Image (cartoon, rainbow, N blue to C red):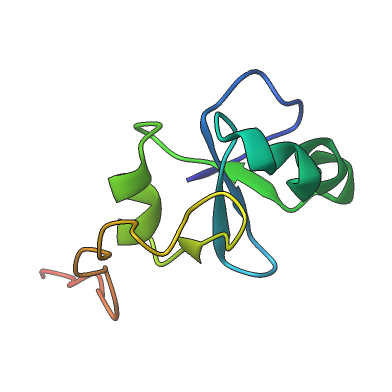
Length: 86
């Protein structure tokens, strides 16, 4: 995940303050105000730019960009800690 300083056509944009992912290709997404998210400093992108990655990182579906038939989120990274060896 990385902060978006300027929207450059990413398909999936996360709203970090609400942990919601938006699908900018969805016709209803223009109501989600992606440019406003960028201006507020809460827009994040995903590497790779795909829905599974966003869900894996703990983001939930936007209620406008996804319908109720959207696939179930995969298991997420939760509580992973770095182990020091030495």
